[in-house]
Amino acid sequence: MKLYVYCLAEGVDRLHKTPHGVSGAPVRIAHFQDLSAVVSVCKDFRVTRKNVLAHHEVVQSITERTTPLPARFGTLVTVEQLSHYVSTHHQAIKAKLSHVHGRVEMNVRMIETIDGAKTPQENETVPGPGTAFLLEKQREILCRQAGTAQKEQLTAWLREKLGELIKEEKISLSPSQTVILARADHLIERDNVQEYRTKMTKAVDERPDIRFMVSGPWPPYSFANIELEFSRQFGVS
Amino acid sequence: MADFDQILVGEEWEDTDLSLLETFDHVLNRGLVIAGEITISVANIDLIFLGLNVLVSSVESAHETLRKREATE
Image (cartoon, rainbow over all chains, first blue to last red; front, side, top):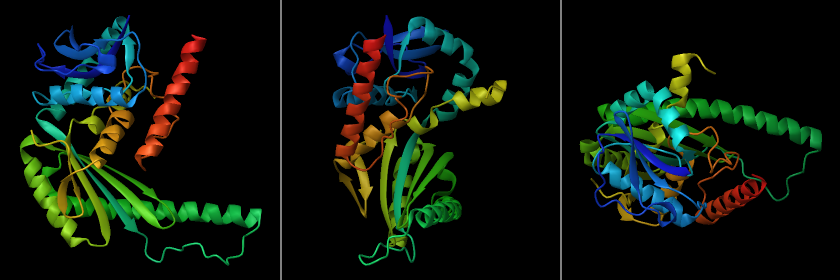
């Protein structure tokens, strides 16, 4: 028997108005010591848009009461696998739940045009394969360098705008030849969502050169994974 | 809990279909990894946040890969 896992949580003893889960399956709680796994018994799981949304709605319904660790979509395990995972990661799970307790995730996406970005011209000479290879390598190096610098500037700028609201952040950049696409994931206190939005609205006004998209609050998908921490703790690479 | 579906685009908070794309991005690309090998990963598939069509294509690809894997089990 396989279980579909939506999230892990603490202090969830019963479900209240939880929507149906993936493939229309009812949602249940499996207890492992002092932790709970929100699951469905899954016989026929498919990767569909409907199931993606069902996963999110279940996690969201739990997040309305407490802050869970959302599992990645498509997590199918046996009861034994789940039990083993929880028992071997128990300390790390508890620590992570404590860290996200009372908090939610906000996201900021930013698109900035690179100054002096070169756009391809119609009459440009097509380089030979060797030259093209070297030019591409040069572009990669320059993008990487620009990305590192941009990431530091962006982190500093967001910290200046949002200050103590940010409890944890993750910044990722995807530079291309003409634009830098940046994403900032912020873990903030639930009560600070409105203040976060207000501060970001002001920040958006100050940077007409950047296109923003701010979303949230979300369950803490970006801050849920503990595998790396487990590896750090036990020296497993 | 504040409304999940509003997104700040430009200067206005809007209810928008972009929130659906954001949902997909969160659910498919992030979250606690429990099993060493989970259904959606198929992790070599880059679920790139470019647009719904691209994302649907990636999900369909994941579905196809899963079907093939189930057929060999």
